[in-house]
Amino acid sequence: MNKKEKTSKNKIEELEEKIIDLSLKLRTKNIELEEVQKRNKTILSKLIHNIKNPVGVIFSFSEIMLESAEDYTSDKLKKHAQIINNSADFSIQFLNSLANYTLIHSQNFNLNKSSNNYIETVQSAIAFYKETAAAKNIELSKNFNEKPIFLNIDHSEILKVLKAIIHNAIRYSKSNTTIKISISQDKKNITTTITDQGIGISEVDLPNLCNEFFVVNTYSEDKQKCIGLSLNLANKILKLHNGYIKINSIIEQGTSVSIILPIK
Image 1 (tube, rainbow, N blue to C red):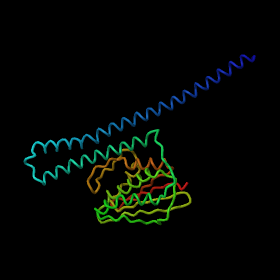
Image 2: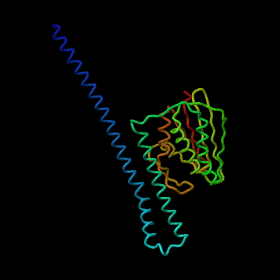
Image 3: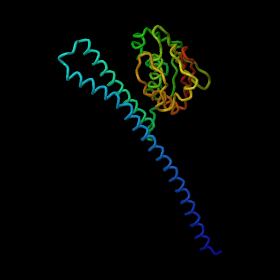
Image 4: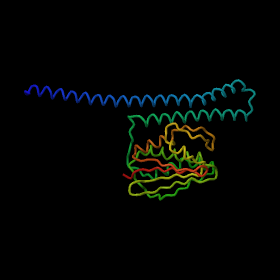
């Protein structure tokens, strides 16, 4: 084979390799596109399902109030206005959660990491729900050394995780109980454990808790509908920090949620 033929053969082989490489990349992009389309379809379905009922309630009760305004007593007005408020509040919470879900699962989402005192982040989350807990006579018991621990984290995102777990603990706890927040450390990780004395979760449901839109077939103490995104978002944020979430629970005895973050 002469030099010209060898050069031509090498070029053909290079082109074949490029075609194979492009084909593999195209296949990968098609899979990603299918996943995005599937997720968007799920989001749209959940949006319609979860917003339709509360908006319907708002419309129905506001229509009743307009039609019979003259016959309303103050107690009846307050009761119906509260129903409208609750439905609107759920709709806003759902839309905010959905916006966060869409953002965090976006390929363009990036963490804004910097060195932060993790103890202050935990303290901020606890302080945020101090009044909410007090309204149910729930004690938020801190069981950790307040000596600073600096971690390379996105403060605002980790704060969302902590607030979501504490909010769930309060929501599913009975009045006159205690929620313990403890922090431990080993050579590799910082573990924050939030333990309540609430209604608990069955062993059947535990493996699915972090799945998107998964809702446990039970009611919280406030009888409010669950959105089913808080733990999914928390788990996603922790994974982006190379951390993870661990949940243990016993029905009617309580739930313990551990947030594990790497020290480095």
